[in-house]
Amino acid sequence: MSPSPAGHLSPAIVSTSLGDPTIYSIREKLEKAAVDYPSEKDLFAAAERIADLCQRLGLNIVAFGPFQRYEGLRDRARHDAMRNILKTQFLIATKLGTNTIIVTANHLPQNELSEGFILEDLKLISQWGLDLGINIAYSFTCYSTIINKWWKAWEVVKLINSPNFGLCLSTFHIAGGLGDDTSALSYKGSEESIRRTNSLVRMMEVVPPSRIFHLQVSSAVPFINSISVDHPWYVLPACFSHFFLNLHR
Image (cartoon, rainbow, N blue to C red):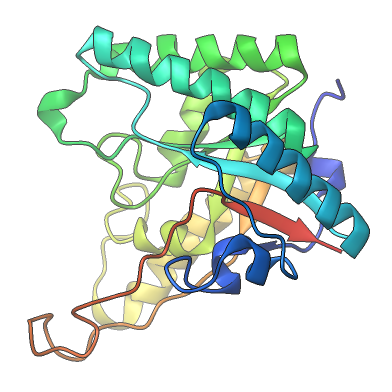
């Protein structure tokens, strides 16, 4: 395994951006590659068919995920169950022909999580990845319970200290987590841009590009009015499908 996949980063589009999975099938998303996978065996067969179709279309699957609600669970029996699901995720990734799995920082309620288990759990899957030739791209979200800022995720990556464990960064969640960066200036109003810039500059200074395994570019529209049953966005289409593929030509 190469020390880092960062040298192979290339423009990609996440498959969930190709259409609402409640409306469009995988076949319609990937030029009519219909897939039905009620069992584990069918999951692997589906992954192989998707990989074959992508190859014929000149697409490469650069990452698979996100795997969520895993690390830091207080309930260790629940953790073990999630660990078994993760084993299947690793196998699906190999069938898809990718060597990167995205793992998202846990966003379950605080009382269900223990910070003391986070590193232990992530070190375990990092070792699994090393054994199978799989890289782990660790992604924080601005609403993750504990690891919800870029610098917190970076600390985790440093502590795991493994060549196959790096960052998955999202412009949306980086921006969403800048509001209370205690290392930046605390000014308000017109100084807001200065404070945000300080945080981003610091990220560029302390995070080596080789430790960024995946970069997601996305944006959001701020609410003009508060959300309510009368808001046009109150009922949103499902935004995740079973397969979260990052594709590039």
